[in-house]
Length: 134
Image 1: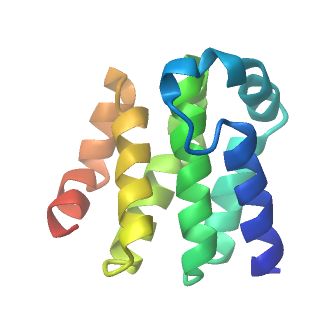
Image 2: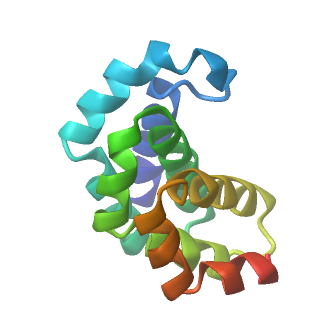
Image 3: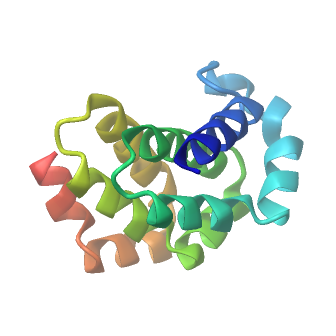
């Protein structure tokens, strides 16, 4: 099941632009908005919680989340409510020596905390401590 989740998150990451230059992120906005409206953010959080030890699941989840919250502003609000901050922090703490989990998890937190509500929530749930250990 983890392998299926990994591939699904890989596809979501690719649909949200992959590793392309985010200057052209508007190109992917409609796709991301449709995915977010269909429950992609919540599904990613569930997958992260179901497979906390899977490095690949955590990495691809963080990659997809990073792009989702970077591209569509409304997705940051949805992500904050859906538990993304807590899921990413758990991933960072669990996979301290995994460079790609750390890189994409930190990037996801940077993007999601660009609004005040998520910034406050991130502080309350230990994002600063998780980043310092990283």
